[in-house]
Amino acid sequence: MSKTRILYVSQAIQPFLPESPISKASRHIPQSVHERGREIRVFMPRFGVINERRHQLHEVIRLSGMNLNINDTDHPLIIKVASIPTARMQVYFIDNENYFKKKVTWFDAKNKLVADNDERAIFFARGILETVKKLSWAPDIIHCHGWMTSLVPLYVKEIFGGDAHFENTKVVTSLYNEGYQGTLNGSMHEKISFDGIAPEKVESLQIPTFDSLNKIAMAYSDAVVAGSQELPEETQEAFNALDKPTMKYMDVELSSAEMINFYDNILEGKGVAVEE
Image 1 (cartoon, rainbow, N blue to C red):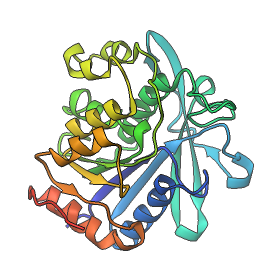
Image 2: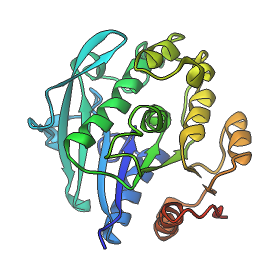
Image 3: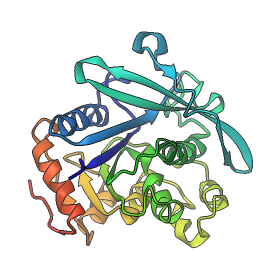
Image 4: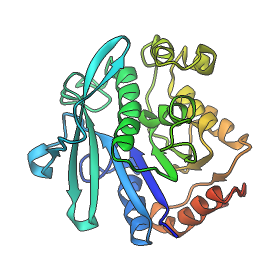
């Protein structure tokens, strides 16, 4: 029997970005799952604040070279990779000069949202899925961490669902209390529709708040995990109302065995919620 293949998609991973609940979970869970015999791939954005020399990032030429059309403009997709030696784990980075060159993450020096965060999220989601296709690697599970990954479930189901690499893929989203105030660009839903997703599918993103991104991720995921003990009220209410497999908050250091059982239940079509 072949190993279960799990694709981890995160907006932040230690040690490339500072410790936070997301970066810690995205570092610990893949390693623990890999050590328990599963096959993994891990992706994150190559933000400009990441020190490429220190972390020994290098471009993967055979995976780079594609162009992604975002809002009727072509943007070259660059793939880089680095290892976490202590974890024996490789991390792939989605990169582009326009979107990820700035020495910022999601906020600028004045702690304001970066103006093109909406397009960066679209580019990140599409870039990951196109790269996985190019790797000829079909994941059984895609596990998303953080609001910047919120479009991945939507794109898997609406754009890539008929592709042989993703037709049997189950998507899991972990929700965190690490978001933003205000909204992303108000034309985000139009840019997503430009990719061929029906406008009614993204009506909820006409005002792209942190909660609305969380809710669209939940809607298109096969299962949802509470990655933080406390979630924003609107997100928490939507999580509580879900009629699909859920896993309540569990300390990341203790959750690897439970997470694997959760994955197995999803793949077997079981709909049991995992309690604290």
